[in-house]
Length: 365
Image (cartoon, rainbow, N blue to C red; front, side, top):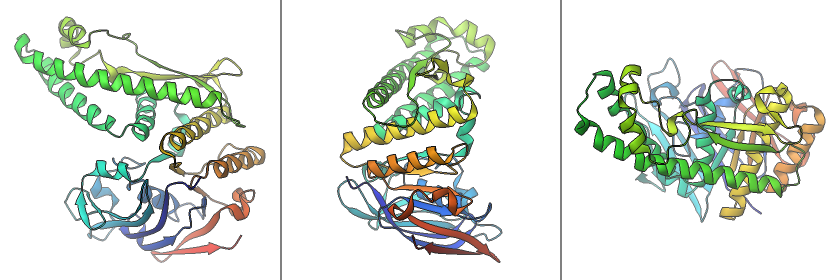
C-alpha cells in the first residue's frame, strides 16, 4: 500500500537552515548527523505541513533563522490523499503563519484534507511519568489524525473556559454571565470526549489484530473529577468551589490517558525506560495502521531519535513493521549504523553544517 509522502522539501531561512532541499521517493527516510546539524529542524518543517504548531509547538516568529530578520518558508511537493499537491507554509517577520496549496491561500485545516501525520519525539520519552497535560496532548494529537475537526472543538472549549475562568477570578456570582459559556463548554466538551473515546477504542481494536514485536497497551481515558453526565449542570453546581480555586476544575481539560503494559499487567509509569519507549512506539504504529485502514493510505511518520533505548533487535523489528505498513517514516539518528537493518528499503541522508551552510548528502544503500 503506497502511503502519503513528501516528494520534495525546500527550506528557506527556517531554524538552522538558510537554504536546504531534499528529494524523496516515498520510501522510509533516515537522516543522520551530529547533534546540532539540523536533523530535527527538518522534521519540524515537515510537521508544519499539517495543522497546528508542529512537533515543537513553536510560535511562528521562533521558526526564523537567527540572527537574520527574514521570514521563513517551507515548500513541498506531496503525494496526498487523492492527488499530488504543491504546499507552502511561511511567515513574514511579525506576521502569522500562512498556508498556500497549489498556489492558493488556504486555512491550516485544509492541510488535513491532503496529509495525515503522526510523530514521536524524545520529549515524549517521559510521557508516562510526567504531568497529565503531556499525555492529554499526545492523545489529542492522535485524535486529530483521525478527526481533524477535533481541533475546532478544543479551541472552542478552551476559549469558553478562559472566559469563564476570568469570571471566577473576578468573583462574579451572577449566573447569567456563566450560562452561555457553560453551555458552550458542555457542547464542545461532549464532542471532545466522544472523539477521545472513539480514538482509544480504535487503537485498542487495531492492537488486538496486529502482528507486532512491540508491547500492547491497555488504554483508558480517566478524569480525576469523574465523568460528568451533564457537564453544564456540573459546572453550574461547582461555581462556588471553583470561584475559591480561581479556575475550572471539571471537564475534559482535566482528562488523563492511562496505559497498562498488557502482557505484564503493569502500569506504564512503573515500566522500565525501554518498556515505556516500546509502548509509545506500539501506539504510534497502531495509529498508523488504523489510519491506513480508514483512509486507504498510511500516514507520514516523523520519528526523532527513534532508536534511543532500542536494542538492535527492536530497531530491526521497527523498520520491518514500518516497511510493512508502506508508510513514509522520516527518522533521525546520530549514527548511520542505527539504520543498518533498514538497508536498501529506505533512503539515507547525512545532514551537516559548515559555516552556517546546510550540507545534505544522500548516501547510497
